[in-house]
Structure formats: structure tokens, C-alpha cells
Image (cartoon, rainbow, N blue to C red):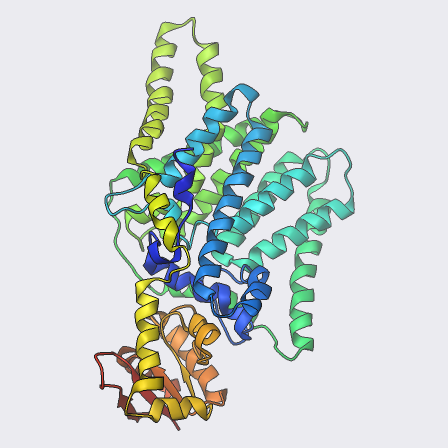
Length: 497
């Protein structure tokens, strides 16, 4: 009751406005006519914008509210699925404690008022689809009947997971695949298992590719690797400290991987809670270890702590039965009891102490009255655009928009098209990505070259970034740049050749 109200966020009072701004376009791109991996290249999710297309079409003037509340619903679904997984794998007497241990780290608030639940790029966008896959995988594998259809279905689930987000989807699918091979090693031969699963996975990707080819919007599958290439190129390279709390998290993942793999290998297949718990532990641990390179060497330790909060919280919750079991086995031996108490229950007390860092839930109640409002950054941008379109003495922007000759590459570009009808020409989720690598400016210029619009409204820094890419020289006329200066703003009109 005290913790869960902190799950709710309102459009005007988002805990992390910056990260919402970079995920919103990924969710709204489909509803404004963009096709993923054809003329729009997401960073965080390829598929999660599909469920809200009808809602955004029905109410195009409320994109901020729809996307914020959709993200909150996805977060609530993650917590529900985690509870169901805990309930199906943990002894009944420990379910409540395990669930509390799980949710505390996710809502623990730092000194700047943010918690891991504020970090929308990870929680929920990169967690929800892998978690659904894990949940469905356990439903499929721990079932009495075994067939080719079961393996193909598992492959289809993993295929959808990979397509949604490669960095977290591929690693989680590989962890599920490895854990499934170990679990079913005495039921299926490795060859039969691999053929069945890979058939379903490849069939999914093939049918999706064929469908978009038929409608003349062929997917650029190679661009699934775009963000990975961006990461390897040194994007946001921040040298990490050699020592720190992030090393505890890494050690924790490796330890839980060893514990769960040992139990999986020594026990024959059954539908027991112990085996289900160790299967889930192994999947989460291997997934976490595989994802570590995504953060290592290119991020702050605090990002690892927030980015992996879901993983280490659920892993620790699943390890609680093991801690209590070891305690019971060794209670007659004082030395073992002392060691177990120090390393087991001290860890538990650290987790429980996080309760004192969680925001007072009455803060959310005070914000409730403005649940329809929009954030200040988006409102200010709209006010600037409305001024130049309706009140300015300089009618150049309004005339270009009226003649359908101009598009825009701005913050929350897709939301501006949905709400104001100002066409978006941005090929990714935030203009900032055009500043950090030529990978995105090349895609942007390729798309803009074939676009029907003759002008683009954007920021001076984006013009400078495009000018640095030789591929853009034949697309944009960098001598034809007009600044909008009637009011204090940072917008320019860039002409095309």
C-alpha cells in the first residue's frame, strides 16, 4: 500500500522527463504512418507501439497522456507477471516476503528523486517483452505434453522477443534457449530441440519480412544491429570505476548463475517448485550476465544499478527460499549459522532498509488533480510553434506548412505530428542521436532525400551535424538556413536541394 502508489506518474510530473522524451517517439511512430525498420529506426522497442495505435488514432490530440499512462500500465504488468512467477516458484510461506523484497529496489529513490521505475528505456520498454517470453516459456515447458508444436511455439515467442529489441531481446532469448536445453536434456535430443525452436523463430522473422515486402515497405533487417553498432563505436563512452557497488551486482549475477545451474544439472525434469525456481533463476542470471557488456565501459555505475534493478531484485527474491533452507539445515552448527546469518540475512536487511528511501505516496495524490496536463518542455515547444504559425508577422513557416512543403526534426517529433499535424521527418526517437554518430545522419539523409518536403524545421546543432556527413551534401542546402528570431527560440528552417 505504501510502495505501489509510486508506480503512478502523471504527464506533468514525470520523474524522469528526459528519458520519457527519448522513448515516446518509439511508441507513437506507428500511429503517424511510420514503418519500423523501413523509414523509422527505434532505439528501445520495435513492437510496443502497436497496441496503442487505435487509441492514438482515436485521440490524436492527447499523445503525451496516452504514452505516459501506457508506460505505467506496462510497468504494472511487469510487477504482476513478476508476482505470478514468484507465486509459482516460491514456497507459500515466503511469497509475501519475496514480493516485498522484489519491489523495494525498483522503487528505491536516489538523491535526485528518481528510482529505477523512472527509467522508462529499461523499465518497462526493454523488460516487458522478455518477461512475457519467460512467463510463457515456463507455461510451455512445465506442461505434461511434449510435441513439435510446443517447440515451434517457443521459437515463435523468442522470435518476437528478438525483433522487439536486439540488445535485451536477443540476450534473454539466448538465456531461455540455454536454460531450456539443460532442462529438457533427457526428454529431447539437442538436435530435435534446436530444429523445433529455430524453425519457429526463423518462421516468425520470415513471415514478418514477407508481409512488409508485399505491402512495398521492405524492412531493413540489418538495422536491427544499429544501436549495437552505435554502442561499439564509443557512443557515450564513460570509463567506469574499477571498484564500486556495480561489482557487487556482477558478482551476485555470477553466483546465482552457479547456484541455479548446479541445481538444474543435478535434478531430473519435474514440475516441482524447486526446479521451476532454479530454471527461472538461471534464465535471469544468464540474461543479466549477457547484458553486462551493454553497460560496461560506456555508462555510469548508477546506470547499472538502475538498469539492472529488476534483475537483481527478482533474483534476490527467488534466492530467499535457498537462504532460509540453508539456515534450517545448519541451525545445529553455530559456525555455519553465524556465517549464513551474516551473508544471508544481512543482505536481506539491506534490501528491506530501502523502504526508507521510497517517496511518500501522498506526493502522487497531490499531483492527481493535474492528471490531464502536459509537461512544461513539450508545452513550451508547442507555444513557440503556435506563435510562428498563428501570431508571427513572419508568415514563412505558416505558408510552408499550409502548402505542405515543410516537415520537422524536433524533440518529440512524432507527438507534434499527431497533435499539431506538423509532419515529422525524424528517423529515430530523438534529434540528439543525429549529433552523436554518422550512422543516424546517414539514415536521416537517405530518408530526407526521398521525402516530398522541400524544407525542414530543426535546431542549429542538427544542421551542423548533418553538414558533417558527406552523404547529406546532395540532400540539404546548408547555405539556405533561416533562423526564426522574432521571439526567443532556437529553431531554424533548413532548405533542401
